View: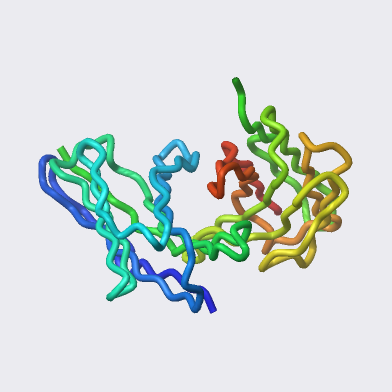
Length: 115
Length: 110
C-alpha cells in the first residue's frame, strides 16, 4: 500500500537559517512520482516539484533543493536561507505510475519562519 | 487565465441541508478531483473523474455525490450535510501527471 509520512508536524526557525523538511514514502511500485506542494497562509495549494522514480538527481531551484534517495525511500526538501515568506504548510505526495490519478498526501509540515 | 475556480469560497450551512460546491476549469483537462483537507489528515480524495460522465470513488466518498456532464465542470454535492463534513474542499485537475489545485472552499456545517 502507498503511504507518505511527514514526521515533523511543525518546525520553527529564524530567518536565514537553513531548514530541511523530511518525507518518507512507501510503495510497492517500481515506477512512481513524488511531489511537494506549498500551502501558504492564504490557503491555496501551490505545486513546487515533481520527481519520477527513475531520476535520482537532486534538484535545486533558487533557495529550494530536493534530495531524493531511493535507498531510504526519502524525498527531503531543504530551504536555504529561509525567509518569512517561506512560512507555510508543506505537503509531500506520491502517485504510482500505473494509477497517476491517485495522489497520496502526507499530513504536512507547518514551517514558521520568524524575523 | 483563471485556471481552476471554486465557488463559493466560504459556506456556512446547517446539518441536514443539501450543499453543492462548484468547480470550473478553463483548461479542458480530462481528469478532475475533489479532496477534503482536515487537520491531521492532510488531503484525502473524495471522488475523481477521468472524463465527462465518468466518475469514481476515492478514499472518503460516503455522504458525497458528484456529476460531470461537461468537461469543464465538476460539482460536488453533500446530499444531507453533517458536522463531520466541516472541512476545506479542494478541486484539482491533472496535466502531465501533475495535479493543480483550485483555491478551495471552506465549508462549515453547524
